[in-house]
Image (cartoon, rainbow, N blue to C red; front, side):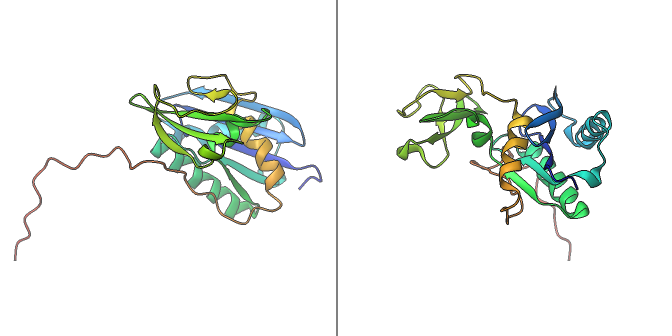
Length: 203
């Protein structure tokens, strides 16, 4: 493992497959591929491609960073499961980073960060805004008042691409991280009850 931290980070919490390799403060490789489905098949292949381009072996990694959402339920599970598996196999820490923290990186002072929750809703978390210190879900047209800019859905673009932001935050946290990454869900899964009749149990 190099003395300068080498972090592989990835995110599939939205309609994309994103990954980045960070050595110290230098982004070695980064990619974002838009896709509505297929992240499970593409994620580790994309990571392998980036490491090959950078001439990096998995044994060189210091930590894994992963986006934990909120966002697409299936996508979040894909990334979090991959991060846990890689971290366990390599014996390195895995650091979960929320979409809000990734959006805020590079912005100073009060702000709010928004993630598209579909159906004209957004997930919102404020920074240096005490009334929005906890993330929540709000109608996109009726956001609560907050100080500073809005970053993300309906607002300003973030300073860093998502996987690069996750990598940078993971690099600052992995030495003290003690918790395994866990999905950040802010609403129940969009799963409707089955319309099929219940099975009959024969005695």
